[in-house]
Image (cartoon, rainbow, N blue to C red):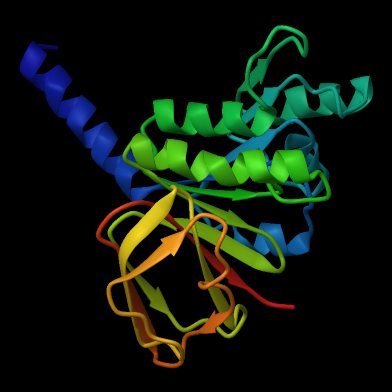
Length: 230
């Protein structure tokens, strides 16, 4: 195969990945809702307990990874037999959480659209750490969405269009930088025009999308966009 053919195959592979989605099952709060969100053709990544969840529900992870300190030896054997690829690491010899390892693998493999379920839960430290991973994905030119039964969290860096979704009636905006400047909202109950949201302010909490679609525009900074329900 000549260099031109090699380059062409690489470009086709990257194009395919750009149109595919990686779906991470982390070890936090999971349920049948998460399985319903994973679409046919998604590249399934199970991080630690998330891999066991997939296997237990009859799904074969494309990749299972982590230190697996949250599963039994028998569960790990099952994961190893069902997963298409297994990457195990030492719990005392790693710098990242299992969820971040999963995100980094997805990014390194070229995925530009990534969803993570089980990244939110009862451990506030892990939850906040996973929310901050949205920034890492953005810096790598990818989009990451965190989901659970009650929330959908993504990042806005310039412009974001939202479609009405009855599952999540509330839309909250919180800066992930010291300030988010030039915030303009259209289609919302409480519009904003060239506003500034500062870290520590609650001005952007509990808005409602009233049109079929709405837009969030941002001139500078980063905004967490949190869609939620009670």
